[in-house]
Amino acid sequence: MRIVGVLDIQKGVVVRGVAGERGAYRPLTTSLTNAVSVRTVCRAFRQQLGLRHCYIADLDAIAGNEPHWNLFEEAAQTGLALWIDAGLASAAQAVKMANFLKGLSASQQQPPAHRLVVGLESLPAAAVLPDLFSETDPQQIVFSLDLRHGIPLTQIPQWREASAETIADEVLAQGLQKMIVLDLADVGVNQGFGTEGLLKRLISKHSRVEFIAGGGVRGAADLQKLSRVGCGGVLVASALHDGLLGRSELAAYVEA
Image (cartoon, rainbow, N blue to C red; front, side, top):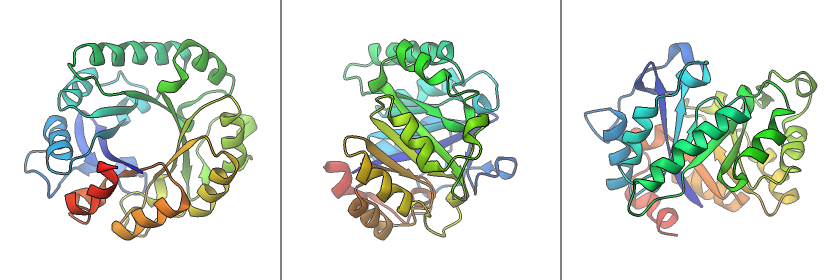
């Protein structure tokens, strides 16, 4: 099970996410480093915790602004494989991001596998997905099933009354191999995660898909529970910054 460190960017600053209430996000404080630039936090993930993957949520881009290309470059320079959510809403945007990530890889001696994240909340229509998948490498894409209190965050009319499981089934029917199940209500509130039942059902139906759980991980016990469920990965933020998960707790997963 891979551990993916999470880094949120808002107004060009690294911030701490709490329950998906982005208007209340504040600049990050962390036990890992006194400086909290993108570069220093990513370096701490890599060097202090031994992580190999970092999920970057560019909240400015998700809100419709230009992505922070320069900050992505800084993050890549630390050697982490980046999973970037920049609010992709069209095939053209996905192609631009995919080409940018190829450029990052070409500039690195041992290039990691960077990935682009397609978030449910950013999609204007379900019909965007086939075009997006046909214009980019499906192996490079991770779909994020964005939820709040278990309810899908979507602007797509036919999905507004659909269950999270139904949406996941429809998306995965198009051949996708990686899916994040992220409940924003669980982020940063130290109350655990509420997606265990959904994850169990999806994993039982889609055995070839790697599911990555997001939101609510408090410590080693939660990692063990998600591993038993069958998750292929976990997004982690607050537990890393608060010192609840250190290198020793992460080692078994990172080294595997």
